Length: 169
Image 1 (cartoon, one colour):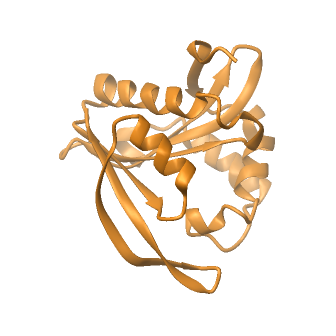
Image 2 (image 1 turned 180 degrees about the vertical axis):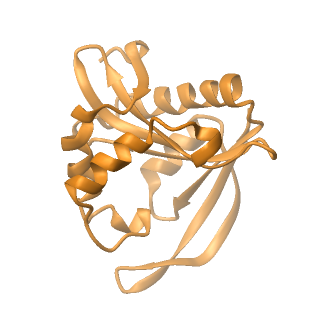
Image 3 (image 1 turned 45 degrees about the vertical axis):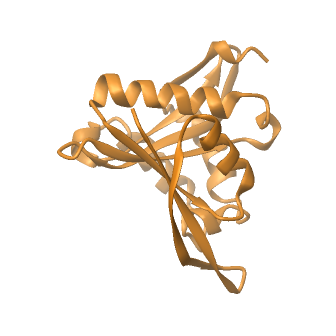
């Protein structure tokens, strides 16, 4: 797969099936602090909301695309703080597209977007201590581990730590 052809685009109504698949897969709820599925109607409204200005709603989700393949995953900007010029980032790649450079390319693209269009200085990521693939991804993109939130999240009947990574762009 030629990752140079990866792009980020706005969400489209056609992304609903992929969103339903990802958001309603309970394997990932622990990382999103969720305990129940989303309805199709709610996700359709969410897609519509993505047309709003990030400066108003303080978040934005982009679909990760590759030429002929429609949606490979999503990358989010959240907790956007224009005054402090920082935001959080989250990424999800569909299982079948992992471990081939798509994540790294997408994190790089969102960093370029954040610097050029949002005038950000800092991007951060919250990563579960046991999420080694995500840790490896962000470290390969130049993010630095700056802290550990001990016993931060509760799932699978125990508390789990969460690392805080950041990059100055």
